[in-house]
Image (cartoon, rainbow, N blue to C red; front, top):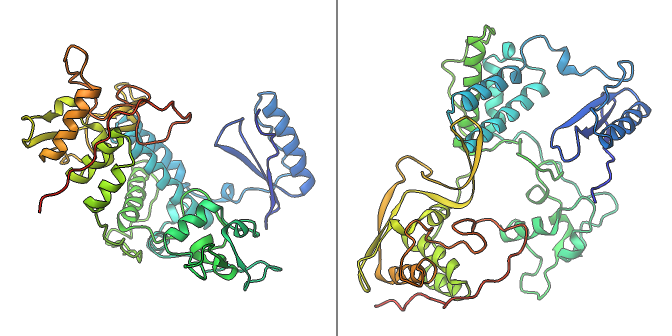
Amino acid sequence: MSRKLTGSKKQTDAGWTASLPIHRGATKRRTYTFSTEEAADRWTAAAIRAIEHGTDLPVPDAEDRVANKRTQKAGTGFRTMADPWHAERYGELWRGQSDRATTALGHITRIAAFMDDRDLVMETMVRDKVKALQATLTRPTSEVTVNVPAGVDPTRLVTMAEAVELEGMASRSTLKRRKAEGKLVPVDPSAPVHRFLVADLYNEDILGPDGELRRGPRTNGSLSQDVANDVMWVFEEVSKYARDHGVDVPQDRSSLAMHLTDKAPSAPRQPISLTRCADIASRLHVVHQLVLWVMRILGLRISEAYGIRVYDVLDQGAGQYGAVAVKAQGGKKFSQAGPDGTTVTTDGKDDLKTANSKRVLVVPPALMDLIRMVIAVFHTDAEGVIRQDARLVPGLTRRDAGGRQPSARRPQTPPRPPTWTAPTRRT
């Protein structure tokens, strides 16, 4: 049974804003700002009836609406140029796969939000405005305004279960992540039940810089340098496209350098020790052990581990070193552009993350023993014929598919083959 439609309504400086999805299940919404709350309620009720009957949302009367300031701007809006640029580059010219097209569309949304909030158009994006756009990507743009709500004692100690009941607090999963990251520290870590100071819960690290949890991309700056550079690349490409179509884009920023981000570099990642991997492997199904050891010993990305086929493995016999060719990806759904330009979803890709990622790696004898056993158990029929085109990592619910993401329905537990763990290392 679907959830009852109610719409959203809030009061803003301009009036009362009402919003509803264009149809059931749609992510795109239709939003109008009304001069009175009564007008907003009338349109919401009429729009809900239209959705339930499968018709288009009604357009409110002009006298009830507040004019959208975006429609009052003189000039060319960013999305007016960005959307056809995106369609041409990624739709007609196939200059990127589906994932890249989605990333570029997210950058367009971010830039458009910046310009719309400041009533900027392509013709008014002069040097100072472009520098301001760069700053929103590389510098925090909001002050910390997280405060303990009125009536809540900041000195009170609460458990995690009690914390999630506080006004405006994050979910339990979010609090657990913040605790694991070291941003939420219990008052007494040695106690059997961890308790937290209420004042520590209401801070920027837990609730974000403005004290309001939100979904979607963060727009308060401090992106990594590569992402910030990519956003500005999209902006410059759209600007070139706009100039080609006669838009008077300012020409005063050809020498403008890119802001350097203040985002702290990530801490160096340390590989999990072989002893720890052996402990983890002892608790896993042999299929999952295979993925763990292939990634740990050969240093593969998870998608690369799932992309190996049986014919990619060179086996020189028991006790000998082997080799594996890394040249494909798998383990999840991949969206790619088909020959006719449509998006095709597949269980694997015949290429890797970068053009230079293809490689052949030496496999130590202990890992070859595991690979050999998996091929014998999962990919060899009763007559001893090996299915060479099979994915090395067996699919537990579908042949040669799945593995990285949880399925919507829990599958039945397959018969457990013999468990294999790492042999003792020689000293």
